[in-house]
Length: 437
Image (cartoon, rainbow, N blue to C red; front, side):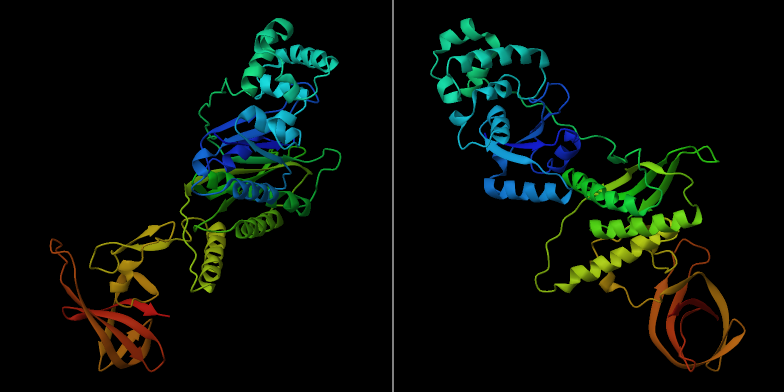
């Protein structure tokens, strides 16, 4: 068993950070500061990575962990050992091996998860007694016979003694991520921001952290909202200023998400200005979607940049227009063009079926429009168009059980004005169904 200890700053939310690494291992234990007295009150995360050796080496895992924490502006101490207690002690005391740890580390062997603060006083007294006997390291402590530990120092120190020898393991409980993914930052009440610029400096690492938390759970964000808590109630008796954001496409980077959020906040606040100073900002995820990774295309390096630009554009449109205003058309089995598609919020990754579909106009009318064509002249919107070419004939059949069913013969009509129309003939009439733009 190999345990990685991530010693975090005291005021860090260990649960939220642990969700980032849930993808690497489900074996996670937490130690949250607040129970133990100083200077032994620490916040830490413990990751069991024995099953990760086929993916990462220990040194690679530690480097990736360090880079991930730096992305969200968190400085942490990392250590790796064979058990939770040793990993925590080595993260606090930078030594090369277990026996070199100071005798004060018995506190972390007696209660590595910080669950029993009542034992702290007993361990401190025992450590003081050991130091008076010139026992300063665990190497010196292990020289004491085991049968003398309990009578002289108590059962708590005996438990620590057994954990040093690897005779008493700490059980792993199930780690359950939070149901609602949320990040919150509270500003200094003495100097609360009154515009958006200071908020943007805080918002970027919050979005990065939220993105990593969802990715660790195998998810990505589809919709979220920014909640600005104002210092006082407004005229509408609302202190919360909420702005919804829609991420319409997958694989959008945090940089793109931040740009979309910034544009939406600027636009909303410009229409409805803030009335008071902001005391806190929150990011709350309201809808998630599965996170699917794809391998990079080594032979087309601009493909990813092009896709990112396209995703950025569509997500901006969706945020501005809403789900109903920006959508994708997914093909379904139906011969009639006005019925062979349906709305989907995201673009399907499988586009193999699109190669079998002939060229279609970008603008498709909801219902075909009856038009008049005679002697290669078409009248549309009371304007005449002279037809120069009838091309790409295509025969489509409607459903056989419909009374109004029948055969349609579609043509692409080129005109002298440069306009191209998609027209079909049904029995003795012509109908305009689309316009090529």
